[in-house]
Image (cartoon, helix red, strand yellow):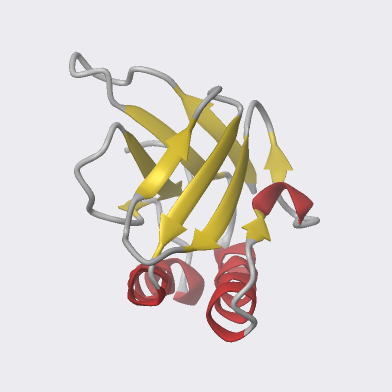
Length: 126
């Protein structure tokens, strides 16, 4: 599984932080780690610290927040995804389809009107 940042993917200046290049087993492990760390332990999760994730040109930390804010950054290297418990519960539901079988589909992991989207895509495409 790889993590990277793509700047200005369209004429509106939108960006993507994406997790890609994974199979259903890695998707399942990722979903379990998010569930355990964020929802049960109520701790932040640095994705670059997960042994099967290779952080290519950025780092992403998932954090609990009082509001669903999505992904933000000040330097385009270190990103933070701030979501509520309900936001992460929805994210985990969206990951389910990737855990049960191999797929070439993709999923944006939240629907918030901000500059940076969070893409989950085995093939890296959208």
